[in-house]
Image: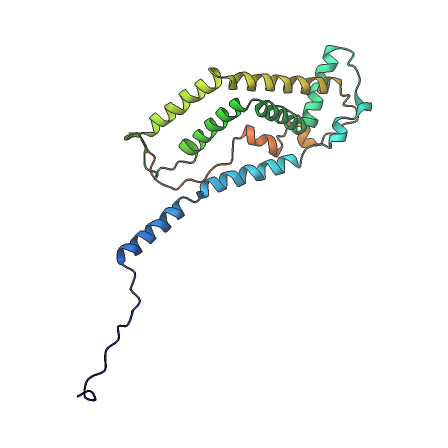
Length: 229
């Protein structure tokens, strides 16, 4: 009877298949990770600003020429100082803008509270208005949806409060006044006789760096969808 008995069946551990619910969760997580990546509009905006700044800085004059001590002399009259300032601004305007930007940056770095407020305000404008597209859902906060007009009104009111009711406005104004004073003194006392301007500069052409402030920031491409009301 022992010989005729069938052999014992041993349990075999088969690999369990992944449940469909787990697959759905993994797919959802991947989509969330993908959506959390920086959008192409931000990359386009930043790359446009970076290329504009680089091309503009390539037009700056050599700094030894800016601070050449042998070229400084006292103007004989106010009209001569004004003429010097106009010529030097046409020739050194990119360098002047770099100097004013450096003074502004130093002023903000020495006032961390103003720097944090200004950075937060700029980030709010970028991510709540500039980078938003027509296909984006409305902004939800505390269980309430805010339309585009309400968001824009909030940004305008926030800008007024930050610039006029905090120390940010005074820091910016004082830094710009100091920068304008430094530029004016240099332009009035720097003799422009050894400076040579090309035809485009004599006609008042705007270099690439200044075009960022004259023509605005690089445009962010928007999809062709209907405008929101």
